[in-house]
Image (cartoon, rainbow, N blue to C red; front, side):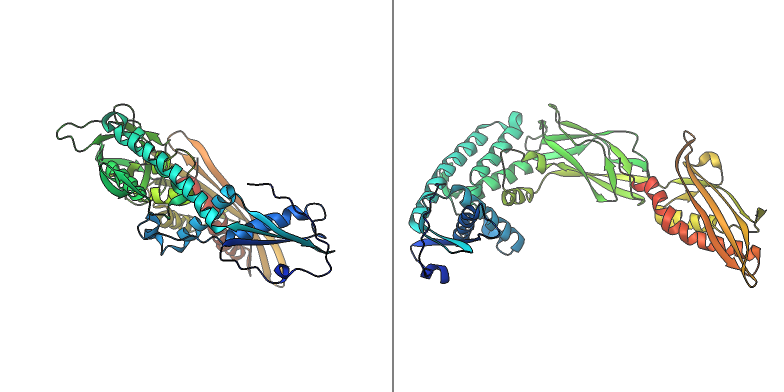
Length: 450
């Protein structure tokens, strides 16, 4: 970008271009203004920046009918993304713009830029020619690789070819490839998709067993191989892989890539959903596969829309087995029926998919619950007040370790007798249990992030 100097023009009347934006069919025009009061030191630089942005805003992005972007014309978000990137690219590459005039008064400073449309188009054509040569070189290099031994090198060379052209995705760039006339960007993308389709994933297990809130105890392997070699299955080494859920929710171990023999090992760190049947999908991690050079967001979005090889594994999920020990009292006397226990059990069954077992030894977790009330006497007339303290803990039965505890303290109840005031406190405590304790208890069982 040229460094453009300005000369202040002290004239009594504002020039016409300050009032009315200039229109010139041969030039892009930019007019910038800055307040001296708000920017007493750098008002000139701010005005120059505003003029340049104003000039760039005049440069319209046109999408050729055979360009890759023509497929995204109806996607307004994608279109805005590319237009924004095009303006940033223009700011970084623009050259030979001219300062036509400047003017200032006591309050403001104005500056007027212009850029020859013909020179701008010529400079863009020169950049396109250089980018096209680089892209063709990367593409030819990619296709010279033997994908049996250099699968990812070939794939990433194609990404580099597209990266060279990312400023020009709206152009129908033509080239001769393998003796035929092609649209270069479309041809590279087609080649990448075809290369992805040549891979098959084969899981070493057909199904897994797990328990809600627990890891799947055994890691599992997936084999990636080229599928067009007949009975032979040439491995695909160093392909980045990821796990995702088709059904259910899980927390996974570290993502990985295939080794030199085409094998990748995975683990499920925790099952986070209660669905009895869940599906985990193993697929190519395109985010990592395209991590070469600096890609624009528009090109990333196009690449991430490629279809990737994948396979699924069924996970049969057992519910969490619970055993509850309760001690609920009212005014230190045993209750004829428990008030908190049935409410908490229903919450754990409905929301966390837990099963309650008869024998403590069969449980994954123990819930220990104790609660008692005390009378606070008469508060007015014949109205009595009582308060309740409730303590709850969750114990991992496998190692007798307390993994969660919480309490409700001094929950108030009101009624005409001390006993009924205590029962009223239990009813209030159930509401508090639902809002204050149960969400944290459920998080500990199912959704805790490591």
